[in-house]
Amino acid sequence: MPELPEVENVAVALREHLTGRTLTGLKVKCTKVLGQCGTATRRALLGKALDGVHRHGKYLVLNFTDGKRPDAQLMIHLRMTGQIFILEGYIPDKHVHLIFDFDGLPVHYRDIRKFGRLLLVDDPINPTAIAHVGPDMLLVRFNEWHRRISHRKAPMKALLLDQGIAAGLGNIYVDESLFLAGIHPLAKPVDLTRPQLQSVLRVCKKVLRHSIKHGGTTFMNYTNFHGKPGNFQSKLHVYGRGGEACDVCGETIERIQIAGRSSCFCNNCQPL
Image (cartoon, rainbow, N blue to C red; front, side, top):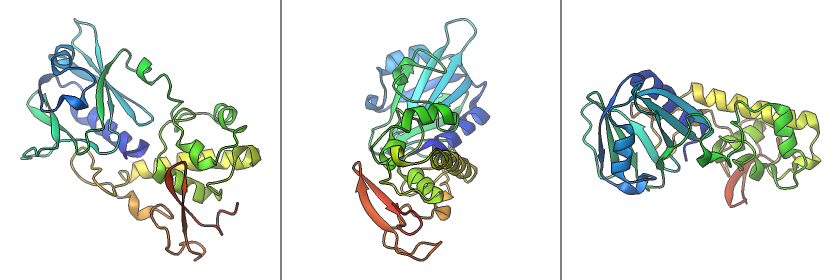
């Protein structure tokens, strides 16, 4: 599933290539990926230019305006297999469900499992559709995050995945962050010291920024705006490496299930 770094790379590309361009066409091949009908989507967006892209956690909100009618906002959640890209000479396959035309530039939305959603919302920054989502992981201050998590008795792995506490982290970056912070995924925040929790948040942000710099992580089908995979997977220490040797201490990396998710960690580097 695309996590914060992958979504941020999409956001940067959208701003760079589409800001100021007018949406002149929208071909809808599958309405399931829309949160409203194709007609309503076209009515709200066509003839308006993209003038802002806001990311909150794993969500993107695109603001469209023409200076006359009220602005319109389209929220995008890529979920598991959603992709947004431009490719010169690309012939859409059966998994391309939407084709946006920005002044002659085709932008494709491709989604193998059709879990992603593109929904018209009511605000370019804080739409009510994601009022349940916590603050962005890259922006949240420690004191606020500490209030949300320090009293909890659930495993740290599960709580870092909880988008209601802070938004943006998924399985990949939680495993990596806990490894670099030296915290076992089953550790409970209530049992950790304030400095340990400070380290967790600091490392989470560092890992996210590092992955953004390297274009995100590609294991299955994530690609950037130009159809190219990310390369952060070459930097991973534990995620997806169960049964292999830890590249720090040489001990075998373990793999267990926590909150229904696979979790990889080093018992030696991350003692419980």
